[in-house]
Amino acid sequence: MSGKLYVVPTPIGNLDDMTFRAIKVLQEVQLILAEDTRTSGKLLKHFEIATPMSSFHLHNEHQQVGRYTEKLKSGETIALISDAGTPAISDPGFLLVRAAVEEGVEVECLPGATAFVPALVDSGFPADRFVFEGFLPLKKGRQTRIKELAEEKRTVILYESPHRIQKCLMQLAEFFGEDRQAVVVREISKFYETKHRGTLTELITECDVKEMKGEIVVVVKGKE
Image (tube, rainbow, N blue to C red; front, side):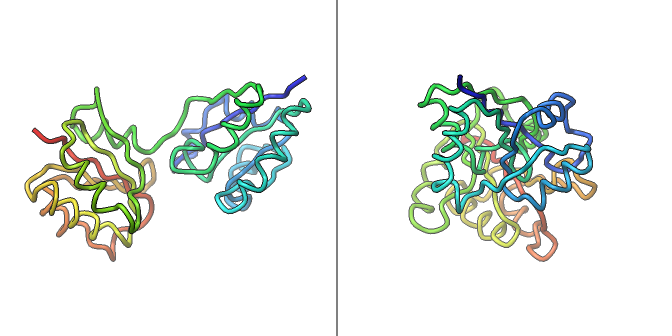
């Protein structure tokens, strides 16, 4: 009999965002696969979860996916978590979910934290239709993709790292237009959460790379 794979979102900042159901599942499964066992270890300790944990991250998922798929097929129940948010959303997880589905193993994703949703809603831009791009390509294809997104009439959502945020905003201003409205949200749900609103040109000045730390979401208004 096949086991079951649970995809479990974890808080992106505030631990109070952990759901009762997520705690229950993590307590009851036989194994937890974590992106970083040190980071997740602190979370599990906080909620008094003693379930065994193994490492499953970007650099080993290709090698490990077969091993854990076999465990699932043999009847084990496994939970997949990332450092923060929902696994497979700009985090490892897709390969294991796909393999489980292909092998007929039941997969269940719990609802929970994802950074781009509160950023989108907080932006005040249309949220009925949007494009979630995640991280843009670092080099090859980056400019081409930005040009394509510049023509989008839907709200565009990006993830960006602190040390690249100003360069990203400059590139967006170049192709989207300097006056395109956008919002930069940093450290969602955490104590130092900040929001910067304005045109892309204004945001380039406001978002000092020296002060920008943590997780960043950029929300850009669609082309009118």
